[in-house]
Image (cartoon, rainbow, N blue to C red; front, side, top):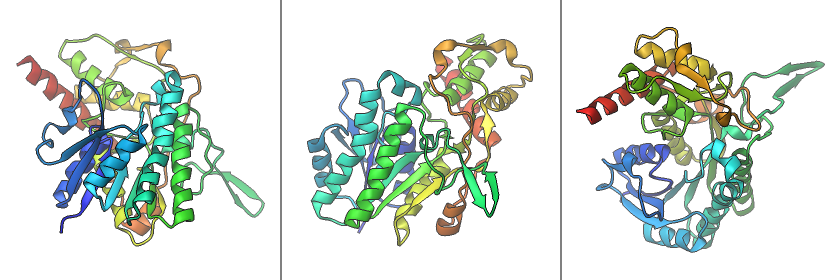
Length: 335
């Protein structure tokens, strides 16, 4: 009998990559998608005939329960969220309702079903924020450069705070009700399917347009922020591995390397043979956040030890994939 999986946020980057992965594993895949008049299913264009889409909203308990009954899943992957950190400052209440309380609603639907359903929660490195990541050994106090599962949280945005609620309620229901709940504390991860509102896609698309003579600059915010960037298809494998383990738990999923926005620009412009990109970049105050996280870098040691997972795609390979994809999209559109 085929395993059945329900994925919230299936039309997003992670959701579509996870659907691809599960279909290869011979799953029956159901997607939970918000009711909107204009659907953006670009990421699902090759998947729609292979999956069943159920409409609903993470702010509507009845629609979640309905989706659970129709799909009757063995596994639920909660990837649905207001996932743009910058937008969470403009819509903090909506972000809290979807990204935070949405997790509770899904967990309640699972609990009330009375069935043994494995649950994956997409937690985020934004929960760490500007944490003081200190390690004590005897009289020595050292600053750890990488965050792991024991690092304290200090979120710096409404998005990070909402994700932290989702993370803790997932853990609380696991310990209180014996549910098989796992949280993946995922550091930044990208792919060719990333939305254009995200800085990485803004860069890859902008570099491609500059190379093709379709643009003359890219407007960005803080260029000094450092992030641990991985490749989304690598990360969705980790999500699946968590639910195949005998014991539920929480795992940091990362690459263990930190790169700045400047590094991303270096790598992206290098793909099109441009060494000095300074004249193409405009720093726009509109893209500066009220509170910024300076550096994020993760330690995926537990995932490697317990799940046998480690990243496969390097930072430079990731950036190259994104820029070349945007070049192909723009040239095919022009043709």
